Length: 416
Image 1 (cartoon, rainbow, N blue to C red):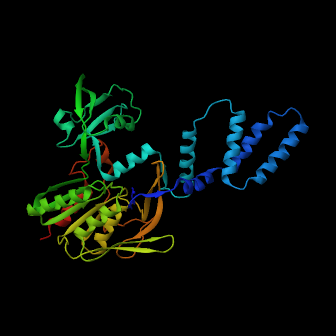
Image 2: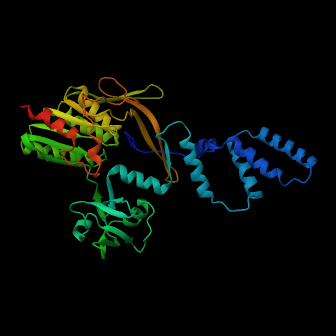
């Protein structure tokens, strides 16, 4: 949960660089020292010198009392024999990434300062940009697939399916981040963009502003059935979810479908606040850390959504989305429809380091109100529905082809 902070998330915590380096050097592997020694041997002219060098090398290894000594030894060999040049910052980043990648936690990760800024922006759901979502299409071109309402992109006239061929003079975008780093910037500044539309190149100069990522979509369907889709749990999602509920209730909603399919999770405080809007008074979530310390989040009696509900889940419903779905299900407030969820029942915390880089790793397990930890297990739907493969053939699933949604409508259509 990330997706993170706590992912489920706590506020970033500062760790001294000295404390972190104590762990950083632990990423070294003894094989690297032996390899460096082997390279050194090639410079020895005769067997006697080779034997003496080997003894000396053995003594050096025996004297190395810490990982830092091993690091120093490797750099000594590099400085003495390596024919190329290396970048200290790249080595540091590589070591940090390797360390977090090898602790046995598949959710652990190290972030460079630039990556850490992007992580926090993504978690907040707010950024300074122009207000579009893009994808790499089949031709490896950056294509706009969504233009957010009320944003500079919409005001300037950007359209869905426009191909972005240039941003501030840059034309090569091997990955989406190459474009994103150019388009995002300080509020009030501008970015020059050229798009290809109907075979013609169209230039735009667009001002950047603070953009909130839409994470909630909603509508009132037939028979008074409300529908809310939640794409992720960012900081901005609480207000968007509350606004959706308020609007649907004003329109006379009689029942509700909450769709968290393909939702990877998100912020801890966000999902707790959203669950509090729906659940009766009682436990929302409990967590336990490595020392057995327990923390319990409670919902109050001020709000409770007293409507027949269906929650749509699938194999990509994870983390905070599973907590949200599981809590509603545990209180008997909703029918779960779809396929078994991902099964991420652990919480990650984000830590900011002294150079503004950061890291995240698992710090707690979480338990839904019934006391279950769903890690590695997931949530089993009350009604299993699999969308047929043929529905995916044109890469667009219509409402009629969405068998899971149709089952939810069927369940709620007969409810008064």
